[in-house]
Length: 156
Image 1 (cartoon, rainbow, N blue to C red):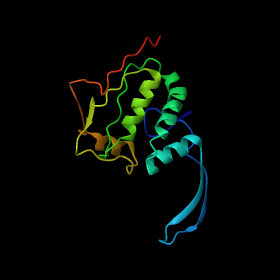
Image 2: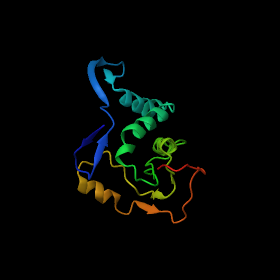
Image 3: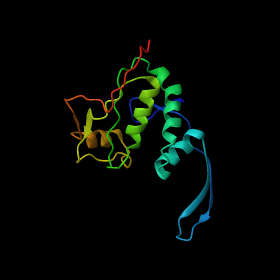
């Protein structure tokens, strides 16, 4: 894991996503094809995101517990970022839940809510654009409830 700099306050990456990628030509529909070598974390993320391989959640949660959690041991609750798109299963929520189980921190999935007018940030380039897009995009649920009842022994 390493710290990354950018137009955000603080960022870390678990690993490189792509180690190498070689163009191999276009497919029958004219789309470019690549022979891509990914890191273990990069491959797990790719399989989860693009192949809906839900088994990857545990590997990614374990990596977060091993590499991210030691930097933030005083965290008392986890709140997943609400999804931009409605899906039958939400990868971020499930990853947060798996991570919470490993590090024995409760997850409050419905505490932060994204309003329907919320915009996706992935195509915005500047911090100012992202801040403007987020303005009035979220609300806080004042009725706190956990998705599942989880009892944790003392983490001390």
